[in-house]
Image (cartoon, rainbow, N blue to C red; front, top):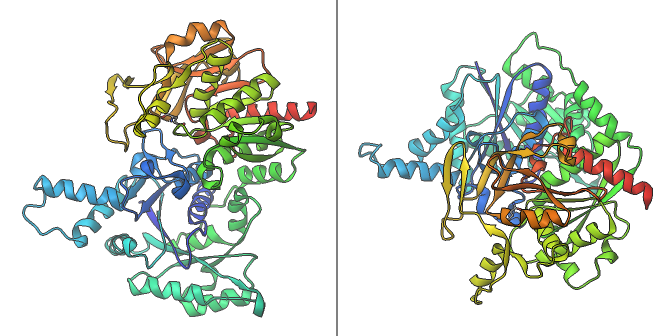
Length: 552
Ligand code: GLN
């Protein structure tokens, strides 16, 4: 029987609900249970694929090609369980499914309403895969009381009502702020938030209380009494210096124990936290630090490059160093000398990106890394910029560019120029034996080359050595592609195409061998990195940065 944990949030947003859910998933795994985590987002976008990273943070991509909320990245990083399309839903998707059924006449003339049609659709989503795992953890996005969240709260209330007793529990995350003027922790926001939850028929079984420090016993007792939750089910969740301390810290505060008790599981299997103890031990005993410049576009918002940031820290865990990322706006290099910002960094990374703005700055950064022999990692757009740089400055194709820039400019009304389309708009490719076709005026949502694709690596290449394999599978999310017709020319000038799609048509990896570490990849390796299993490319990139730190 699958047991369900519904995770909701109150008081304010950004309390770390995703992280708490992910840490709980890891703790249940540590007791030998199988878990799956799901995210239900009340916003009206069909998926976050078209949302700006400035507003919503990064778009996380699953193996099966879904563009999802970044919390699915936390879930994967903490549990190692690959997320699927069926693990992420939004109001937009729910409503479009309901409306699609209505148009097809599936409701046989009924009047379509939020209850039961929308709530039934939500319940079907939650129940999909019932019985496959021991625990299904479902996180509801937003905060209790949000208008658009109501159908989700109603659906989980009904869901638990329809299941067996003790098959579903509700875990509510709140904030216990410290008010300096009176030197006190305040429980009132938690009380109000629980009241709000009760008003829609949900009584929380567990309260996870976020606060700066651990909650004193007295405060826990007060929350327990006023919110009608047993004292052991009021879990203190203090701020931590690293997110990877969460499983051990939350275990010590009794989170998994409270969940086991709420389900009435007795005796409970004992947890084995060695994986997490090892991760924290490595983080807390770093033997040095390396500085990595990340040259991007959305650098003001930490969440825009969440998986990159995490994968870099995993590389640090693998090498026992602390990685400090220096976030740099690529546009700066269009007016300022790159060495002012890049001199002294131990490695340079250009992450994925979209649009012409900042692209010349990224090309400058790639050139700096190539010339100054600084370890360089180009990811997706970063690889495309590195290839354009090599085409211009190694192979003499002065007019090398990407069709993406041309599309961007032509939207502003400027006439199309002729140039060497080293990066071109991919209109046809193979996926699992089927041909995928795209047109420039296709819908924007969900039409990129998305999800897991395999690549064949050249024997003897640096990447084959790093992966210890010549067949790999990595996740993609892009519309443009390096044109294979430039392969021979670029290889003649030292940029080797060491990874190709299995049919040999699409360049997947480029590298320069007479450079300490210069690799560009068309895919997103950061999405598959875990603290306890750092991605080999990130582990080796940070190893190279560590070497570099000994030289400068
Ligand atoms: N904008 C580029 C493309 O669509 C790169 C995308 C990315 O970096 N994810 O191909």
